[in-house]
Length: 486
Image (cartoon, rainbow, N blue to C red; front, side, top):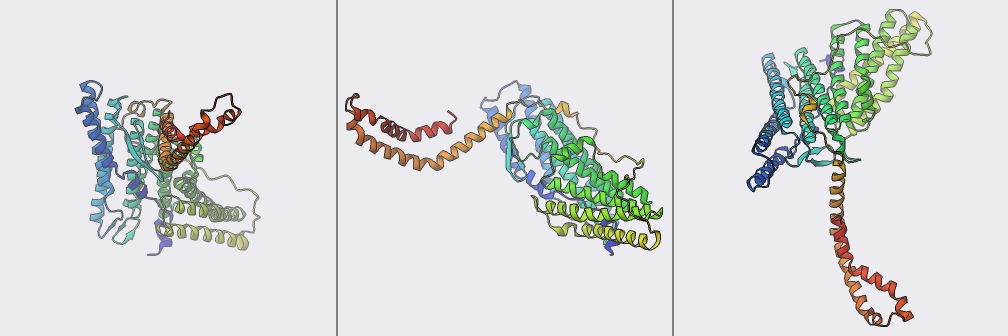
């Protein structure tokens, strides 16, 4: 019952339940409309291509429906795991593993069907974008990346449930943390695979500037990093709970903070938004943990000054950077509440504070060492590699999708402009009609003057006014032509 002694004081895995709910919003309904559109076109003879082409599209739609139904079924399961006995917990673990395996098989079949489809156009694929409503595209690359993203988010949701599970009123049992660890590695691998899909298909050509890009390569790389970092932090918590040496724990925490060079570059582009704040927050926790355990290691070597500097820096950086990024994470869309991670916050803060006080006290009373001006190099050791796990059964990313043409975004921009122009004309049409009627009245009043010979100075002076009246008369027509793109 003492949270400060629980392994969960160093474990928090964010479950993107709301994001997954949003991605799958109307997914089945949109798929049914896509099927209806295809079959109606095929029946009326409007579908182009050979008979085998129609068979390939039907196979693709079949596997797509199966994947969406599998995602919806898995999402509807309980978001909170609490089991009175270990037997029931074991059943739930097997169920989660079976769910992940089943979705992997459905995703494999879907991607294989997408590969067989080639450059064939099926229709318009619609997926919900976080904070931006629905976005549609006819390109299979966009649909494939969205499907892979949903599978990655579902694995992360299952990992979050496992990390928060209680068995016989005990929170954080090791088997559940092991399940969460495996699911997070799987989610990281899927997100990285989705990023490869997006890069191979040139998906950035679909999205317009300023739009939310849930399936962009940079966003998926960031997700992969977040999931893998959470998995590594579970290994840090387990090492602390086992009583591993301070040197080993510091090395593990430092490893969970560092990003590979490629992912670090992508992460710089995504510091804004919920996942950017989450990545920065968890990176700061890992850094502070690494510094604190390095301080405890230095303290055991009677280097009190170094220990004091490391522990004080860990606490100061967490209070300044970690708290700021945590608040940004809670406030970003979709919003979360502080209560979801209160125990994690309090456990980390208590450990950082206690460690800083201990190092300061022992250096003042025992070691009497001066505090150096610079931090020592972080502790690095040869550790077992914790890497993302991508299902080997998935086809290579380069074979699944066809490259999107460079003018795809221009087509989308033209459609957006056409839609905005139509809305503007509809709203302004009453005023334009009134302007046209007024122009007609003025035209009738000026008609006698128009009959005056052109050599008359009065007629020449009124020519500009006559042109303005003519423009007023034609205002509704000009507006309609402009809205239509003419």
